[in-house]
Amino acid sequence: MKMFMNVTVSEAGTIKWKMSEGASLAPGSLMAELALDDPQCVTKATVYAGALPSPTSKGPVRSKPNHSLKAALSCLELVMNGFCISREVSDKALEDISHAVLDPLLPLYEFQEVGREEGREEGREGGREG
Image 1 (cartoon, rainbow, N blue to C red):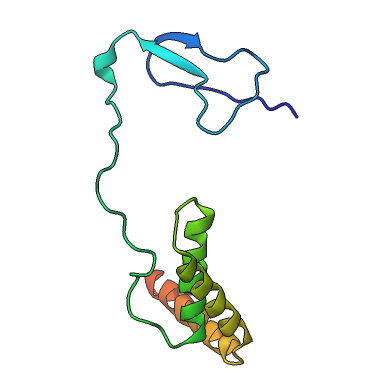
Image 2: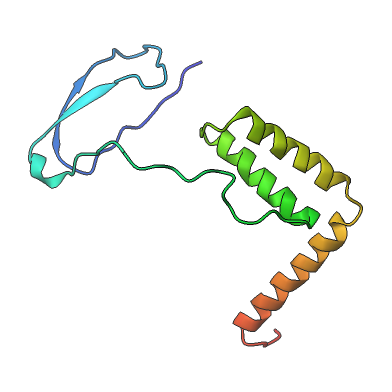
């Protein structure tokens, strides 16, 4: 399968290709290097040395099924975005999802939440109806 990819830069310079046209790309492959005309215009990226927040430190344990469903889905979304979480945390998230979707009160809580959000939007609009 062929894929065309635009490579754009915001500063002027000369591109030196490291891969030939039609070559297979692997994640992290170096395609080209850019020799900038004015290197002072660009800030070099640095490796982040801080600690990332834990995906489980989002707050207190929620008892309502719609809250536990949202928390579990956001945890699994982190996995889909490439973050590494422990097997126990992902298993707990899957378990929380299965419990939440089987809870008969889930539709009621979600309906109430939608009603509250609509009320907030009406408040922002000044309560005017169109």
